[in-house]
Length: 421
Image (cartoon, rainbow, N blue to C red; front, side, top):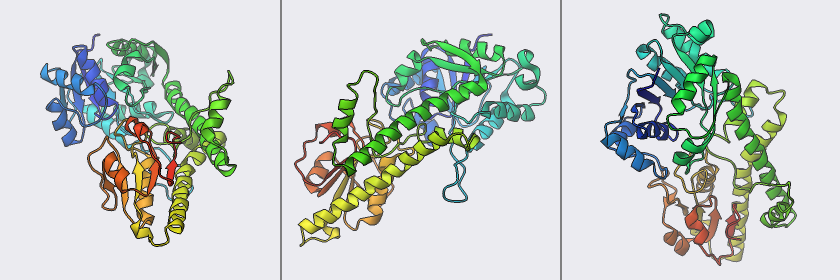
């Protein structure tokens, strides 16, 4: 059975590029999102996020009548769910974060009324192990007139699978096409039909497994990165204590043919690496000891950076006794969680900037070339030129391309990315 109409539920950093990619292959795509602003923006042929080349794809798809955005699901042949999976609020400090599946549940119940025999439902949201099976249960409860793979296997009316996204922000359009996809169906038929759907545009290999392994594959990839980054971040703090240039050290160590140490930074952000390891820890807290420790190292790194800013401020005031803290301007370069994007989710740079603004009595500037405003009265969003002329203490938090061109002679610099050393 071919897929003529495809519904993508959740039009964020993954859903919208995926919807646009299907539309670029002449498929009719219905995008669904609860955000009216996002829906209206897309229906004008514009985008509400920053992602290279995506604006052209969306504009062309809307003009050709192949992509429309709505706030309530409509009938389709395949449904891809790409909604957030945040954490539930912790009752006590130090509690292991637990995943919040309410958005997946809401999306499941929203599409249930329009499902028909032969439809395919794929969960793309990064999820804890077992989430795809839980989604199938929600669908089954809502549509007792249809059969699902957990009870009817290959003969089910509705096919269900998990296929996690594996793309890098800033390169999503290219990587959606070129990257391999891990596809975990709840039955062989579910997997085969999912491969058929993704092969509409995916040129990489579609590798079949079961739903639980597909869920764990994405969590494993990001947990591995988190552990590697934790090593680099811990190393940076050790080197600072021992008066060693950590970037030179890593460069030397990486000359070994079997060593590839990552670069340290102010922490770890984004909705993947900073989040996904907790999904593993929450399921197996007694076993995931290394993964939990790495999360702790990376979560503590922003505090270390803030302490470095406090030390620099004290040294500045000691060297300039006629000034008070209120006279000192601190500039924070970068708010996004990684270079050259506008995504602020789980961003350590944003958290550090807010923390500085909370303790510092003077002016705090933020230089983030990928956003137009910030919702904090005590943080002023400025250009690079404005910051260079007004700043006493410079704090580099994100290695945006624009920042690499800056030449500073100032004495008070905290460079968490090693681009100004």
